[in-house]
Structure formats: C-alpha cells, structure tokens
Image (cartoon, rainbow, N blue to C red; front, side, top):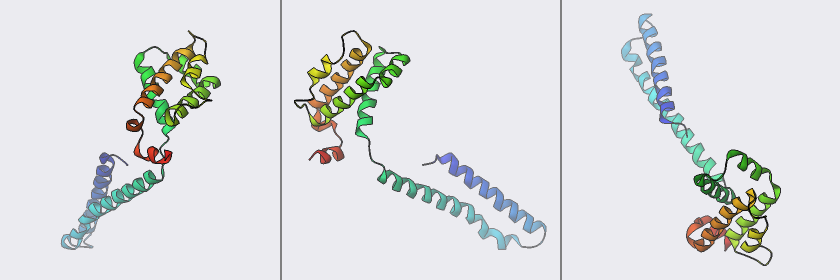
Length: 166
C-alpha cells in the first residue's frame, strides 16, 4: 500500500487541475462558476477510488502470498547472530556460499518443524563441523534456536503451520 503522502499529492494535483480548468472556463466566459462547482467533488472522488483500488489489490495480493516459514526461521537466527556481534559481514558471505552449512541449516529447520528423526538429530548437527571453525560457531546459534523452537513448539509456530503439520 502506498503512503498517505502519495494520495495527498494525487488529491492536491487533481484540485490544481480542476481549479485551473474552472479558472480558464470562467475567464473565457464559456461557463459560470455555479455550473462548475460540481467539478470540485472530482478530486475527492478520484482520490477515493484510486485509494480503494490500491487497497483491494493489496488485500488480494496478500491472500495469494504464502508465508515462507523457512525464511522466517533463518531470519530469526540471523538476527540472533547479528545481535551477538560475533560475526562480520564477510563471515555471513562465507556461510551463505558454504553448501555444507546451508544443507545443515535446512536440516535444522526440519528438526525445528518436525522434531528429530534417526537420520537428523541435533547431536549430528553439532558434530558436523570442526570446533573453532566459522561454521561451528554459526551452527551453535542455529542449534540454540532449534532447541528454543522445539521447547516452545506449540507456542512458537503460527496457526497456519500448525494446521499444515496435522
């Protein structure tokens, strides 16, 4: 949805255009002011219809858009890592390009969403990277978040994702 300033600008622009047209018609004696007073409702109606159209299109677009829970999961971890100030920008780039780390991140999401399985466990994720490496440091934040999500699993999942799991 566009900001209110945009609609105010559209309204003022249409008022200026209607005022200019009215002034031209009166100065050239083609119409009287009384005949043109109804034109001053045009900017309000035009701006109102414009806003209503944008509002409805925005609502329709939001209904069709699906929430990417995995992206939200990664954003939450990224926020925790950023808040810790333990990583620099180059570290994020390295982690983003590291396929092994990205695969582990997807596995962590699956564990957070569905729980541990024989194939995927938190312990395996902890042992996947050598200690003291960038990936191991980052994975500690991921695992901490997975444990938090699992501990509060029913409370932390949005209602729509809970229904998907059933």
